[in-house]
Length: 101
Image 1 (cartoon, rainbow, N blue to C red):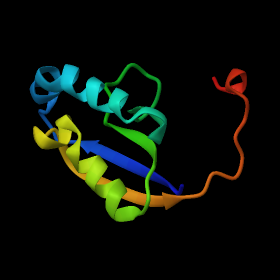
Image 2: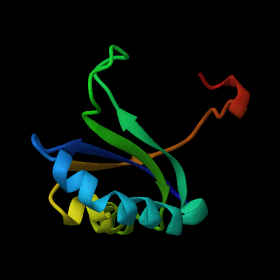
Image 3: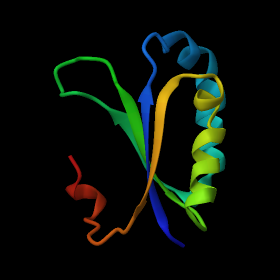
Image 4: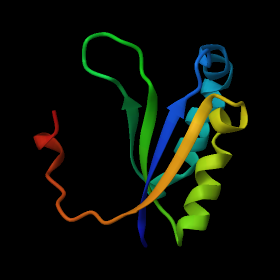
């Protein structure tokens, strides 16, 4: 199945929407099962500044399905994101998990 990178960029002042919807967001991501390849926050740098958004790699049948999945996230439904971008992606190299830092 094809892979898609989803970039979520937070809306300024979205901390309250995130806090209120965090349990539903986590449950939604867990429900994706193996279709959710990778997920994590985006930061400007590792200087202690807050996250600016998040990035996800999904398996989906096509870009339309990946876009539907991205926009169905409870954070997206709550208006926490200023922008959601979806790109087709091909994984060419995958290192063993212990290589990640």
